[in-house]
Image (cartoon, rainbow, N blue to C red; front, side, top):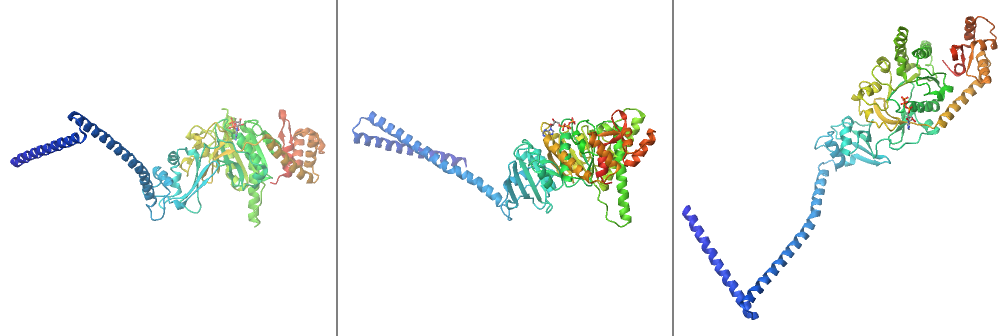
Length: 539
Ligand SMILES: Nc1ncnc2c1ncn2[C@@H]1O[C@H](COP(=O)(O)OP(=O)(O)OP(=O)(O)O)[C@@H](O)[C@H]1O
């Protein structure tokens, strides 16, 4: 083996030397030919030949680089085409049709569908709105809308937005169908105009605010429901509920309003149309209102039993709304035994009222700026069917307003993510689903007009009422333009001559059929609102 390798090397050296001699002979011959042809000296011939070779080498380099560039330019689109080809390959990857690559990529990366599963382009509809884009699509058969709902955070992240930019709706037709709105800007970056009277009338149900697209949203009815509204101070609860009352006055037309204004001036605009309005944070005042309402609930239940017993149609009751602003204060005692007892009774009576609202048509709307665990007793807050939460800083407080299991529901929205600078935003949790809304902010004039038109309607009813002691008392108060008249002043006008105040009070109450109240400085008497309500109200 070693010997044959050495022989091979000797042969190579011999071959190369022969080639070199041959090349030298040719170069010398070539130079001699050039020298003879041009008649030059040997040095001139060598220099000329070297220069000519350098120029030829340069030309060859230019030609080569030019060709490389042209070749590269031709190759660039080929790369794109290659990419397109791979996209087309993805689209063609399913036998069922082309793939919607954007949604497929987002859903795979967000962990909603597995790698290899796809959203078909034919099963996606894209609609452009002023505020964003709506994707309506069908998931692969192995997935449901709930899988999307559980991953809204990662989906938002994949789309380069936040969870609050997304609004998801499911379908009643198919578990696979998803409607996903992707907002261009954070929700409610621009205010929406408050609805007109006609828009409120046309809404099916009771509108509570605008959704992120500017559409009016609300609840189908308050007939068998009560609402709890929580949110930190100055977030817009009172404004939102003022909007709700305005909408109720327009949408319901005829209903009895009981207002307990714990903030003392949060609900004052509606005092004139309220059957009973109290501006107080005294638990004893809540108790007296609860007593009055529970008496109405009991009377309604008796009527319902009576109708059933006699095989008559169920009675139709006038809706009643009891609205409490800053409710938490009414469940706090002052440490004295008597106050502790009142608070304890308030808890029981509130629970009873809210739970009975289901059948009796008496709905409660409670607001609190302290949605802490002990602010509104659990047994009371558990009874609310509709929940709303404006901005709160912590998950715990959100749970108080929205319910302990709220974050296990489909597509929850964390109220702590709301922009605290955009007032009136709230998470509405009703019927098992969450909607981000912004309460209406009506002009004062609009609210006044609404109140005045309700008063005008009440007056029409009063004008039709036949003469009676109560009608006479109302006329007297309206004539004197007062809201309250003491028993001592009213009794003689209605023909009661009794001198003893207790007996006189009893006779007047019997005659009017309405409970007396306390006016300024604790004087017993009758309020115009109570008398009017008794005339225009049903049980
Ligand atoms: N939808 C809205 N659009 C614009 N501004 C609003 C809206 N709602 C409320 N505001 C403004 O936010 C401020 C606070 O509103 P509001 O008094 O209703 O809050 P709140 O939560 O009831 O406060 P608190 O609990 O301290 O009584 C007000 O100045 C009000 O004008």
